[in-house]
Length: 189
Image (cartoon, rainbow, N blue to C red; front, side, top):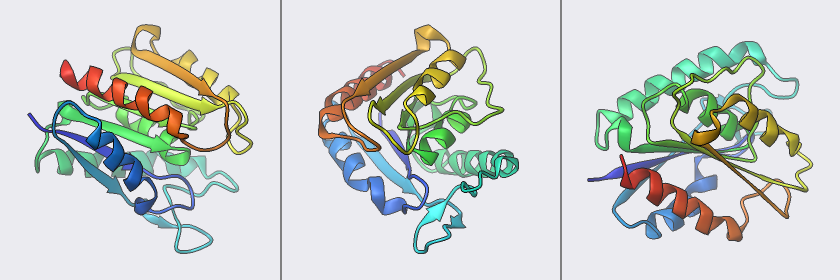
C-alpha cells in the first residue's frame, strides 16, 4: 500500500527546499512512498520565500487560521491517493511547528519536526500520532530548549527526540534515523 510524505518548509524558504531530502527518504523506504512538498500560502518579507504566518514579529494570532488551512489541504490531498493513516508530515523550523500543531490533531501515521518549536497555545491531544523531533545542539535560530518544550507536551511513549552536533539544519547523519522512523511507523499503519 502506498504511503505519502508531506514536506513543510521553513520560514523564508519555498516548497523546493526540502524536496531533495524527501526524495532521499523515499529511496530509503522499504515500500513505495509518494513525496509532496507544500508551499506556504504567504509571501515572505524577502521574496521569493514563503511563510506559514508572520514570524518577526511573531503573529501568533494568525496560527489558528494557518493550521485550519493546512488541515483542509491535507484532507483534500488524502482524498486523492494515500489515505490519511498512511501519511507522515515532516516540517523544518516554522514548518516543524506547523507539522506538530496540525499533524498531532489528524489521524495520520506520524509527524517529524526538524529544528521546530511548539506554538505558544499548542496543546496536543492525549492520543496523537507518533512524533520524531530532532534538533541541533548549536542551533542559533531556534533554541535547542524548544525540543524539551515539544517533548513536555507529548506522550512519552509516542515521542522520540534526537539531538545532533550542528546548527539549524538537517545534517546527513540524520537520514538513517529519519528513514528508520518512517519505516517503523508506516509498517504498522
